[in-house]
Amino acid sequence: MLRKELDSKTALILRALDSDLRRELLKIALEGPLDADGFYNKVIDRGFNIRYKESVYKELQTLVQADLIDKYYDVQSKKILYRLKAGKVVVDIKSMETDIMDHSEK
Image 1 (cartoon, rainbow, N blue to C red):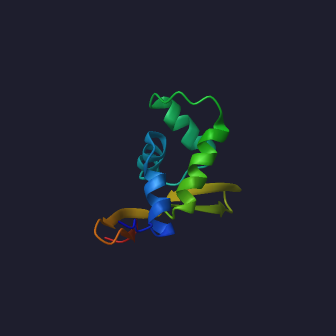
Image 2 (image 1 turned 135 degrees about the vertical axis):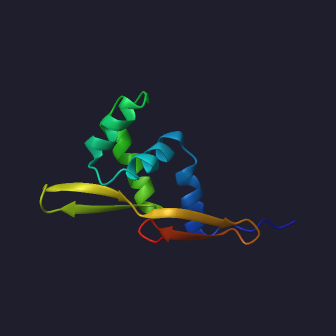
């Protein structure tokens, strides 16, 4: 029996969602844009035992690569911010294809 490989987009999304911390970062992103320090402070407040801020940055990058979060430069605050991009992710189990609906879509 041949195993069908997941397309790279689906694989990235599934890997990104396979982490308690990354799922929590997505929930935090629902509250609005933040910089990496803001995400770090919120996950600490929510009981995550994260030693280094760089760990949160790496996890945010994984979510950016999976197209679930946007990373952008905010001119007013002069900081790099992250905001939720995906409001809904649908995985078709039969075809293993994914569909991402932007957070701004209703």
